[in-house]
Amino acid sequence: MNATGSLSHDSPFNLSQRFLALSFVSIAMVSLVSSFLLTSFLKDRFLRQDAEAMTQVVNSIAKVELLNRRDAGDQAFSLSLEDVAKHITTLPDVVRANVFNRDMLVVWSNNREVTGVQVEDNPYLRHALDGELSFTSGKIDDANHNRPEQVALGHPEFVEIYMPVQDTDGQEILGVVEIYKVPDSLFSTIRAGQRLIWIAAAVSGLFLYITLFWIVRRADHVIRGQQDRLIESETLAAVGEMASAVAHGIRSPLASIRSSAELWKEEAPDSSNFAQDIISEVDRLEKWVRGLLTYSQQSDRQYEAVDVVSTIRQSISHLTQDHYRQAVGIELDMNEDLPRVRGDGALLAQALSNIIANAVEASREGSVVTITGKTDNSRQRVEIRVTDSGAGISAEQMSKIFMPFYTTKGNGLGVGLVIADRIIKRCGGLLVVRSQLGTGTNVIVTLPVLS
Image 1 (tube, helix red, strand yellow):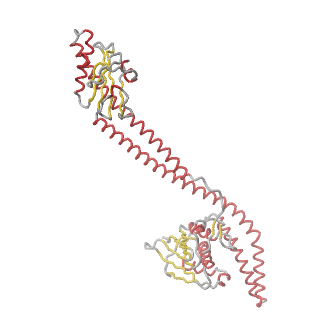
Image 2: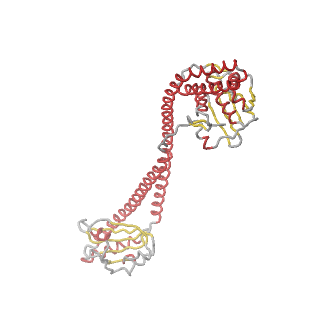
C-alpha cells in the first residue's frame, strides 16, 4: 500500500540521550567521591578511637610507675617507661613497642636491634613530642621498609601509634611510646564498613539514575508530544488558509467543468470515454480540496451511531473510474450483524475510502483487496481489516506514513492516510498499519461500539 505522510523539520534536542550520558558521569563521580570520603573518614575515626584508648592506657600505667619510682632520680623516666612498654607488649594485637626520649633516641624496644637507634627525621614522632597523638596505618614491603624502628617487624599490615607520655602533673612531655599493632578484627570491621559504604553508594546511585532517567524520559516524551502537536497546529493553520483559498477559488470552476463534461458525454456518446476522464479528474481535484478542508478543521461534531457495513459499502462506491480500470477486485468478508460504532458517518466513509483507495492503488492488476469486519471478544470494539497484495512498505517509509504531505505516489497529495488516522482518532478509534516488502499491507481500524 502506498504511504502518505510529512513536513520536514529540524531534528529536536534529544533530552534522553544527553541525560543518559551526562547524568551517568555526574552520578558516578558524586558516588565515587562521596564513597571515598566516607570510607576514609570511617577508617580514620576507627583508628583514632583505638589510638586514643591506647594513649589513655599508656599514660595511666606511666603515672603509676612514675609515682612508684619517685626515688629513682634521673632514671625514673626510663625505668617507668620500660615497665609501661613491657605491659603494653602483653596486650592483644601489639607486636612491637619502642620508647623514645626527647632526643628521639630509642631507649628501649622489645627488639634489641632497635634499642639505641637515633631517629633523625620522623614527623609522627615530632608531633608526639609536641604533645599531639599521632598514628598511621599501612603495609611494609621491601621498598617501604626504610625506618629504623620498623626493623624486623615481620607483619606487613599494621597500625603505628605514637603516644606522648606526660609527667604526673600532666605539664611536661617526658617521651614517646611507639607501638605497632596488627588489629585483624579492627581491619576486618573497617573493611566491612567500607564495603557497605561502596555497596550503598552504588545501589543509591543506580536507583537515583534509574529514577531520574525515567522522569527525564517521561518529560522528553511529553515535550516531543507537545512539539508534534505544535507542529501539527502550525501545519493545520497553514493548510486551513490554503484550503480555504483553494476551495473558494477552484470549486466553482470545477463544478462548471464537470457540468460541461457531463453534457458533452450525453450529447456525444462516441466521446464518452474522454468526457468520463474529465469527470474523474474533476472528482479527484474535488476530493483533494475536501481532504484539505477535513484535515485542517478541528472537529466539533456530535457523534452518532454508524452502521459499519453500510459505511464500507458506501466507501467502495466512491472509488473513481481509474480504480476500477486497474482490474483489482474487492472482497467483503463482514458479519452483517456488526454492532454500530460511535462516530460520524460521512467522516468515517471518507477515512475508509482513503484506506481502500490506497489498497487498490497498491495492488497488482488482477489481485484482490480483502475487507473483513468483526468484533473483539468483549464486543466492545469493531475491527475492520483492509488487506492488499501489493509491494508492501519499507521500514523507512513506515516511519513516515503518518507524516502530513509525505507521499510515494506521483499524483498523490500526501494527506490521505493522515486524514484517515485523524478521523478515526476523533471517533475514539485506532489505525494500525502492518506491512512487509513483497507481501502486501494490512491496515487495521478499531472503533468503539456505541454503548
